Structure formats: structure tokens, C-alpha cells
Image (tube, rainbow, N blue to C red):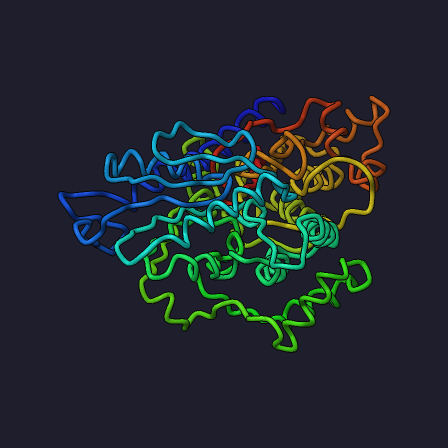
Length: 441
């Protein structure tokens, strides 16, 4: 029965992925009738523009660009999108460049420069469809003058390992960049700019998703220094980064453009895919399979260990008392938790979540938990996450694998690899944070 449960959990997870397929998401928002371009509730006369461009960055931007080419056809003049390695799609007019994620690399820096150069050449007769998804921040590494790419990469790595939230990370990345925090919109001005966004951030704040290159930035240099102090990073950051942040605080360098800046007068922004959409689709699939479903939240964040214990406490309550659902039950949640990395192992927040949950679920029958990243990648691994049940810990111990030792070393990947319980999807070409499916039979 346990293997059947694991299979069902994967199928419910896949239903969530299908709901946020980037090609279908773009086509729901974008259509052409005659000379009219409809985008959501906004309509534009294509006859007023000489050229239509598609620019973008993110793990899903190649698939999004494919949809744009399918909708607009020969009206597309060209463009450029930057994606994580191997997150590809067939394109004819829009160039595709690959770069590093989650750690920026030189290919990303060169690609970001090309994107910025294209934006600077635009004028009022240009229409730009900017295609943005999770991962866009790391894929647009164009640091300010005086900060090298290596120093920017070191800063990103420190923030990742400190347990900083995506909001905190992007606050700093925006102020170390020439294109983030609305600065790409400043480069593209006075072109008309339509941003189509697939959200990978809790609550879908537009200025945080991929560090908001085309929307006004409400954060200040003061906020950056508060993040640095909160995680005790001042002595660890590169000197050039500390100097730039302090120069910004002293108004020696320019702030990012704010939401009321006139450069945003001809910009339009639309969310085309969110975590909630994936959760709802997963819930519908679970109900088709005979489960009562409950979406806990799309905004689960904070410490991964605590989040895992919260979820498993609800599972034990269902088993014990039938609250808040009578079995067969399916609990679904989304969001993005954080792990403070102290060991030298390999893993990601979803694998860490699953292994913590396995300890809490040990010995329970008819229970299965899946935790996976909707982009198909969990941390620096080839797995999206992992699937566990009440037997996971016992099977591990029988093989000489101590789950607590693997957790302490941040090495959940190798624990699940040895058991054959990794969730492997390959690149999904979408990205709306994480999706957790828990079944109680």
C-alpha cells in the first residue's frame, strides 16, 4: 500500500505542475485579434508600435517565450531570454542564453549585459513583453561598478547559507545591481513595457520576484544594512559590497527607482502563474481520487524543521481524532522554507523537510508525504525533493543510514538516494515555489 500511496502523491503533485505550465499561463493572458493585443484586461493597438520584443529571465522564461512566439507569430521582431542551464524550449526569433542558478556565473553576467544593451536601445515606438519567473535574480547578475561578479557571487552564497528569506536576499541584490529593483525599466524607458510574471515568492510581491527588474523598488539602502546586521554578515561580506552599501546609505550613490517614478508610466504588470493555482489543482486531483482535501496555506515559510513538525502534527491529529479531516485525507501546502546550512552535505529545503517529517511519521501506517520544488530542482541537486512514509526511517536504519546524522550534515540527498526515494522530475520549465502533498489513507 505504501508504494501505491507514493505513486498517488506524485500524480497529485504533477497535477499541480500542469496548472502552472508557463505556455498555457501565457496563452490565458495573451491573445491577438486583428491589430489588438489583449493582455489580461489591458488592450493595446499594435499599429502604434514599430517593433515588438520579448525579453526576460528565469527558469520558466524559455517556455514563456515559446508561448509568445506562438501567440504573436511574425509580429515578434526578436528578443532575448536568459534561463538556467538545460531549461530550454524551441524558439525561432527570440534568442536563448543559459546561465548559472542559484549561484550566478560569468555566462549570466555576459547575458545580463546583452539584455541591458538591448533595453537601452529601445524607444517610444517599441513594445516589450518582459517574461519573468523565479530564478531571474540569479540569472541577471550585473553588479554595479566597483563590485566584481565573484564578490557578488560570494555575497549571494553567504545570504543563502545564512537562512535569509528571499525577500531579504533580493533587497540586497537589488542594491548591488544595475538592472534589478526597477532599473531595467529605467533602461527600457520610454518603450511600453508589459511584464508577465510567474511568481515564486510567498504572497506574490512584484518587487521581490526575481528582484523586480521592471517594477518600482520600495526598499532602501538602510534595509540592506539591517539584513546584514540581522545575520551577522558584516565581517564576512566583501569589502567592496560593504563600501557600496554604506555609500548608498550616505547618498553617495543613486537609489533604485521607486514606485512613483515617472519611468513606470507606460509599464503594465501581470501575474500569470502562482503557487495558489498549483495548490488548487492538486486539491482537485486529490478529490477525484477519493480524498478529502485541505489546503493549509500557500505562504508556509520560515525554518524548515519547524514547518515539517507543524505539518506532521496535523497528520498525527488526523490519525488520532479525524480532525481537521477524516481519512482518507490529503493535506496540501505551498510556500518556501529556509534551511541554515551548517554541514558539508548535499541537499535542499524539500529533501530536508521530507527527512525531518520522516522522523516524526516513523511507525505510522497508511501515511505518505511528498515535498517538491515545482521547478524540478531542490537546492544544488538534480532532485525536486523527496517522498517519505512511516517506514522511511526503519528502511534507512536497516541500511546503516542514521537520518539524524544526515540532517546534521545537511546531507538529505544521499540519504534518499540510497533509499531510492528522491523525487526526480527533470526541469519542469515552471517555478511557483514548493508544493507539499500529504496523504493519510
